[in-house]
Image (cartoon, rainbow over all chains, first blue to last red; front, side):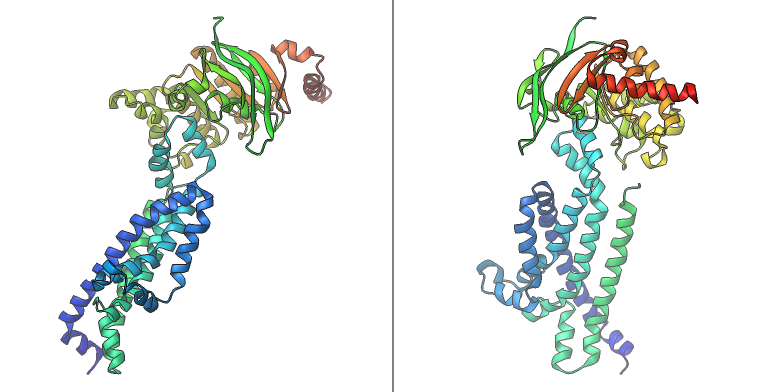
Length: 211
Length: 253
């Protein structure tokens, strides 16, 4: 049986797994942006926060993904549901690039622009929302892009705790020594990653402020 | 005319590290005056300017704007009451010229049509054709045009006071002379109280009704342009000598 035949025969299953995969990644990214961007702003505002926040995110990044899922499994509320557990673990991975790029984007705003904004009587809030964030949006998106591609790959591990997604095929294929099964998980995951990378890089370029 | 609008009373400012940038400076600026703060880099000119619009608060003494201590003013209200132009212009790169110029009126909640009319009026005032420039972005302008937009933006809400930190410093000499001359005409027309920071002696003499000479964080003296040229104060004399050397070169040329 060729790979194409396999794919057409199992189209429904593959599609369902892909949808699961996308849902896990989307939920993760929403959560990671909601947490990472404010943390990045905090780091840019108070440099002394940079070590503890970036340091913690860095450590999270170094824990092997399977081990992280294992560590979180006994945590009361988290371990109750596989998707909850997976999304939490993936969010921890996705945070670092988002925090780092948000901080870099805001710190990188031309000091003259910030000084002018202050001198004209913008409040700190107005400076953040009208000047700093719009000027760093493409840098922040670059971080989101890196995090998304990373998450799409790591999310295949979710199958190990029963959260579904494209990892199901990969784990099954590994257990049955069936390359076609592995590819049924790996190819859509790769396509998703490439697609997300392309889409986000287009957005990034469109939103980059002209200089 | 003899109404004090800005007053420094023994004002001083130190960095958190304890390094003094400005010490015991006292002078008064009257409404409609153009005061030039002249001095070399690090003389405390910019610091003095920043004390006026509360970008910094004095550690000693006080600064009064319209008779009230700056620390009694709400910082945001005070800054919107004072126009501010800096050398690098600080135009927002993601805003069109129109949005840049109308920023303060928008923050102040002016009605839309009035904001637009004001933007057009301001561009015309600084010598830029509104139909050509309103929709452009700062990176599409030359240095001189950017500086004009910077002045227009500072004048947007018609503030009685205008602060300018080396406003023409980044321009080439010819553009600089041109804009300076236009600015002089504008100055006469608008009758604002203006404080300009510069290290350029000829600029100080040309634009200032009075010159405040600063050196190492201290005020060395206050002069009218003609007094300045004939002052015996060593630092002022050094500036005057430097200027005469240039003239001598031109005559000998």
